[in-house]
Amino acid sequence: MPVRLCALGDFAWDVLIRTNNELLHGGDTFGEVTLMPGGSAANVAVWAARCGIESHFVGKVGRDRFGELARENLALERVVAHLVEADNHLTGSVAVFVDHTGERSMVSGHGADFFLLPSELPRDVLRAATHLHLTSWSFFVDPPRSAAREAARVAKKAGATLSLDPSSFQMIGEMGVEEFLAVTADLGVDIFLPNKEEGAMLTGYTEPDEIAAALALLYPGALIILKLDADGALVLLDDGPHRIPPATNNLVDATGAGDSFAGAFLAAYLQEVGPLDAARRATRVAAWVIEHAGARATPDSRLAELLSTQISRR
Image (cartoon, rainbow, N blue to C red):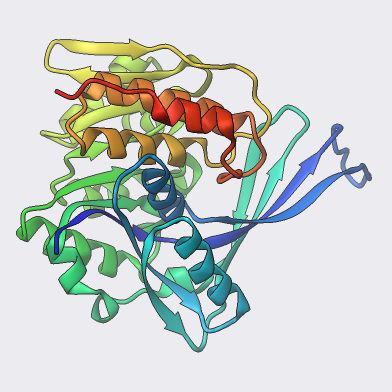
């Protein structure tokens, strides 16, 4: 049976720490401490499912209570889960610090998601996939780099399209741009979804139009979708760059905004919606996300209304 969208990579639990005031060095303040489901690839799978497309997720969790909760969470979100269970590694966790302005910083632990091996891949699922989505959290170290590259090879050989989110400008810098390109640019990426900081790190440019043009040379043939946060997004087409305006500037928590954008964009684009309309839908979904705490806040009537709005197919 065909698999419309398969996201491969990390499921992790976010320990969300949100302060009400500026936290001074060595100081104390009140805020919120919440455990929420996350992981960049899992977030994309969930948001694609929320946006109405059949969505699968491939990843690795620990044989622990958090792993059980991961399985339950994906089932609740109607994502078909293909989870490998590790005996010697715990389910991934991430400390997410959200300051009083809504900006976030993260510290990621090396959980089970970092130890996915090529031999553990569900190859039948990958061969059945119409589209495979990867995030660069699967490329910064090996494993799981070899598993991600093998997944891309298997899916592409079977005719799937491939998208990649570069995920972290700081991690790309620490890895080295040349090494990052060496392990991602030969995958046959069809859709590349960086934010401005990641694009700047990869290209050395600071202006969005220049970043997008340079990325198109680094990933030939890929549709470049540059996420610009408070400035919306940029879609690079054959006739040049197209700006998509932001849908809100009411920032509460930026956690997961890029993942929700990717999931919403892919859900629309894979259902024959043109790239500009798909990016507009994704921008509106990401706007809803940043007005709520966490990467996957509980859907409300406003989100349901947004997702019920019809968009024209190409």
